[in-house]
Length: 237
Image (cartoon, rainbow, N blue to C red; front, side, top):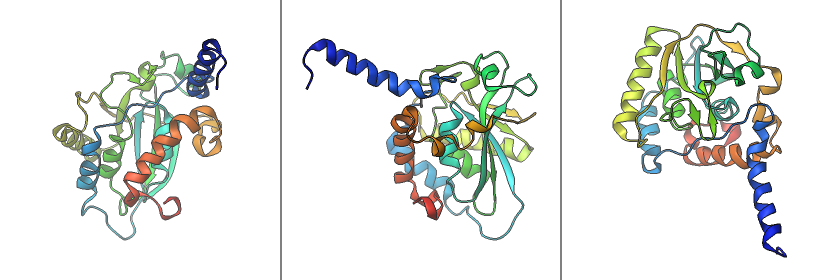
């Protein structure tokens, strides 16, 4: 296919650049590695079993950080019981931060998603269980090649009940050996959620032909959907 080694090397370099290019234009992001596959369904099903309710209830919110908000937003927005997912920033001291400011790592903010959900359909603990399957919670201030406090793993609770749930799920996941290394996810009381710029919202669905979305996010999403179809809304199965 290739006339010489030089052309082959150039092709290889271009492919690698394509994988990393999509997010690097405005911040640079790489998806974390997958958890131990043998434990995947066991942990999710354990926390989903006998906990889904039916009926009306008031909506609640969850704020989570797990590296690139484009990646985790994509999966959460297609889960049963999730009404809305917004990408944004939390955990820092800078008021009304911009994406460019957060990317410097000096604002204290992390990239987060704010999930509005119906607890009569999906519980907060169920959301956290999914959370620990779709990012690497064992790397401090890092997801893949993305390094900095803005990419940390964090749970921002807004009640004592959410704090207790977070601690319980972390203990469950740790005991299950889902991940080989210790979980370093930060559990902190939510102060303020700042919604990110409009172009970050629903990013994957609006940019599926973009290199990072098609080569990195798409396979990750497809794998999760294939393994856990029981969690998905009917229109995305």
